[in-house]
Length: 486
Image (cartoon, rainbow, N blue to C red; front, top):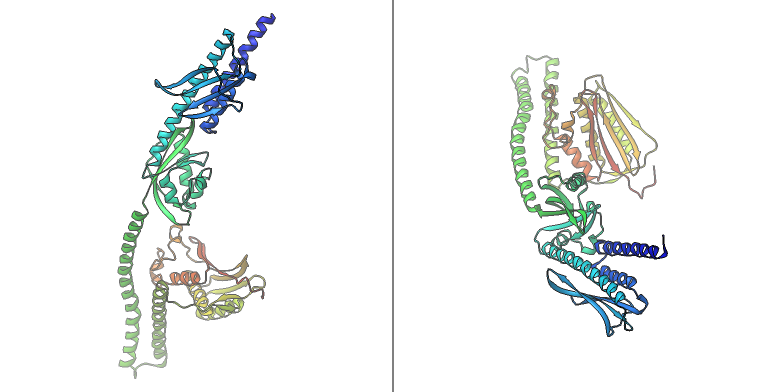
């Protein structure tokens, strides 16, 4: 290949590379438009035939983008930037001295024209983006754009609703603003939107800067934003509507609870009162005809049904006080070991047909608790375990330390609880459905009272169970960090 041919080939490769660089810079979305124009000015200067004696200026919408050495001179070439036939600026090369060689001027003119066309395309994209932004910024609906899980844009309404500024949100993980229980759903819908799948608006919860959890109805769709795939999301605030729905549901729930309570209370009162009345009448009418064993049986019957009434009335009173916030709790540092042993001793007397055991793991510190209330919780859980398990089976109470809590469990080998009942087992008036449950006394208040008492101690209570294999009710009592005594 001749030297002349090599020179032509090298010039063609250089020209091709320059055109590629210019097009690449013009299409970038990760830098500002100002930076694009400044970079194009530098690229134009580098391609000029005599770059050491030239400087470049690009004017767009009265804004100037110049090379550092720019100086306006008498010797310049320029090309107008036109968008849809309208001048919006110009690209010019100024020379520090006059150039008379026609070939060089022609080559430079071609370069200037190429850059002017490229800049015109960038201006169109810039205008489209500005129009898009004006539309989104003026929307009364919260709107955002996300790419790779990060916010690229948030409109003023979105900022107002969430309580953040744009600077705080741009680049932030969008799922951080979603309530943790709804994140899987939102993530799934975002992925589906990127795949182009259409789906109806959905409800979810978001967490504002001040920690408020609010309901929105949201719709997402896939868009091309700054030449790349992204997700456009928009939502409406439905928090007020949701609260109204909850109020209506709560009213209906309370109305249903009232009816159930009246029905159940009348039944629960009628049965023991009828028994007491019957026993008392027999004693009065036949007092001289009854032998000692009959007298003893009738008195025992009265005593048993009186105890049943006492438990029922106490549960009703405690539940009403808990819901009204009037139940007093006197928490003091007390020994959980001693309380557990006392409760077990009394339970063995009440339920002689069950094997009630106690397992205490390690040396336990004292707990800040109301002894009377926690005794009530343990008594209730043990009595429940005995009621729902056959005679001769084992009821185990375990006490141990777990991190900064005392963990207490009451386990039985009874009928167990179905999974669908576990979520509602602590609701007032709720009883599990079982073929033998109708024969078991109670109206479903005991566990509700237990939950209220444990909540008042800042603890947790939950149930684990398998049908036919028994249940374990667990609850925790937080330790006082200042107490280092066992």
